[in-house]
Image (tube, rainbow, N blue to C red; front, side):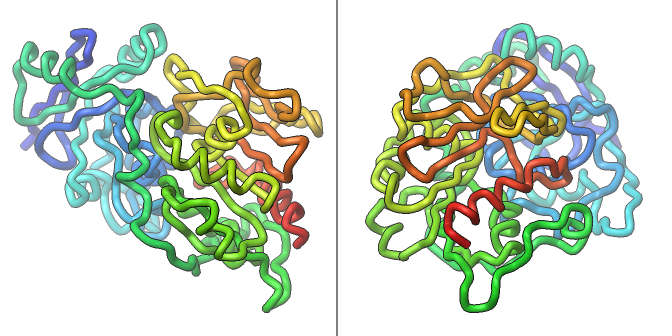
Length: 376
């Protein structure tokens, strides 16, 4: 039997649809993702902690879910919005339907609303706080709850998703990924460069890439100090993606400052923003962010354009970057900073996701660049 659900936004807008997944209420910043595939990777990306995600593609769930493609050990996303849920998936790798997967992981979903109208509102007014409910269907009550819900800005969401302790990473890429886009050859046994990956909410496909190209990977919590990182004697340090506003993460910025010039550094997404802060730049919040698998980015070094996967709501202010920091990549849609490199230290970062699964795969070369910085 179909059960009603409602989505209420902080501006007073209410959408009525059908519930799927878990029963209950979900609060968070409502944003949208334009990807046609990769919904399981989106659901399991810890960067979505504190957010409710609406998919713009009209039918979601048609190929189900499986255990191989997850990006974390649990779902940090607060809620999920689709136009039409596929209840009978068809794919040889599928082990579970999307609806059953969300129910098992206690994530509230809503389908059947006008997602085009929702996205138009978010593009005009910007990402805003909202609530999905299957238990309270009173419009006024839901609007009041949305208005009382905490804003994403200024909150430390990293500590909710980072690992509690350090550990070695042992899994490389799935065979399908290596067949589609081969990575640089592995190095000889016993000569593997050691990468310390600082986990602020890291997607698992990142250490899979590092492992695939022959690195020994140690994953550490995002609160680690510079001295603790250096005590592990890494050949390079990776700064991961993660959720929310980078500005409250002063402990992470202090650690990165303590590592600059001592070890090669590569950052992705939140790690890019944190590296920018450590190098002297400033951050601002984008109106509705970049979330999708079709963002064009110009590599200013090569002149090539990459189609990239992205998920961020904050960006570096280019005019605040010091003269010894070079902007290496820009977003061709809005000219925002997509990559930087230090002229003084072996450190670089990108705002987008070169490790992306289900794709695109244009940016895998960045892992090879990091390996080159480590002398491997």
